[in-house]
Image (tube, rainbow over all chains, first blue to last red; front, side, top):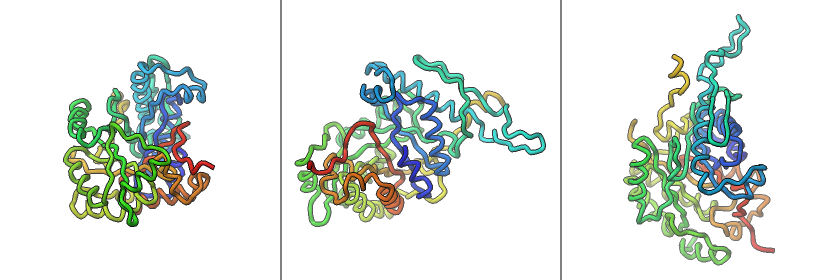
Length: 288
Length: 69
């Protein structure tokens, strides 16, 4: 979150998507931190809903660890309340009316009024609605909540089945993103040689999710194939400097030339880049 | 909703996503956590034209150890 916020004024087009640990953090804080990132980046914020129930994290937050069976319900409540808080100020709530001395139109602020299983939040938020209204919510497949982007963990042979399952569950409007480890050939050494050397230090657990090891051209072909199955990939580069440079130099230009991929343009929001519409405010709909 | 664009996101954590990435990178762990290093990675990703960068800060997982002293 800190690196994402720091990056906001340093960039102008790229989306900024932190994993925000969301089980033991206060949901109100998650809502305001992501909204602040969205404001600072002029609408380029996403939120990967972190749901690791690790008792060590609970201890750090002074919270009681959640049983694995309770994680799903808790995350569903957190996403719901964060979304309500993001809508608790209507887009035009700040009126700055000098004549009457009013900064806010109180009729355009709304309580979140959320009662969950383990917590309740009254609201409203302490921040105006951010540029995207609702920042882009990313979550792992299986999350029972209102999600914009579903992150799929499946190996390449099962990618199509995983995508169909997720599409059936979440509907056509959701974006499906496959998580993909990447190790490319680089500087005269094959991806496999580079991976073997790294694994000799400490192994990279890879079972159950997609991994590509090989040439940049081969990765380009794989992404073209995947573009028929999913809406995107989240690449985990084995070594950032080498693999990011190789993908940027030899893979993305090929995808752009084939018309498979477009890079984000300066000033676009992340929702626009992903083809998601500006969301209506849930409270404005009720009151007007 | 219109047909969605294909998107390519990239994780930008420390020396890389492999737990041993730090062992093949010249930078020290302190340098990798520096503001300069974050700036460099994020701006490289934007120049390359990625859709978004992902920051995966796990509260406890130590992913980017350098060589054991």
